[in-house]
Image (tube, rainbow, N blue to C red; front, side):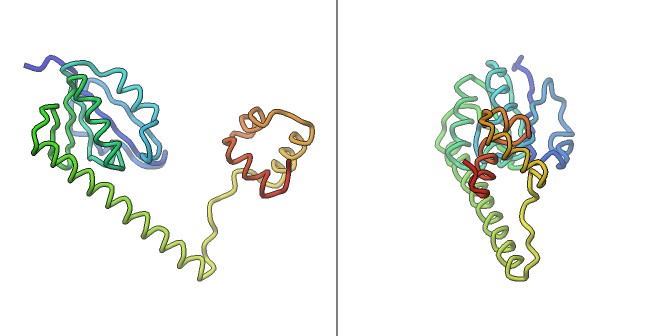
Length: 189
């Protein structure tokens, strides 16, 4: 009989999304929750869970797309868990992967992962089509700017004074890439 822990993994893309529904009917020993995009596997709670799990544990995930959004990442993650003798169970798809690399198990993982990846691509395509239509109608406003005009002036002054770009980004609570985008857009060195 399995003496391992039952661990839940939850991922939502934004802080506003409700993650409570994903595994509400499960009795779990520990839950790892990421509130970020699933575009890659460099997610804090996922990495922490990879280090936490032990032989005999079972990871329960609401659906395949909550763990990974592309087939390569999905296969890699399931394989990593299975190599640690950890079972991965997907509730929505009613699938469980134990590491017993049967041809049927590998096929199911590949097919379901491919469907999840395809579904994500369709959503992204529809999103881009909607944005294009909104732009043609003149109603697309784009993403809200991270910095207002006063903050931008202060940022430019700090750059002119030779302050560290990394430190400036931290001070304004923006990524370095966002800082560089502002600098390029405003022709600041």
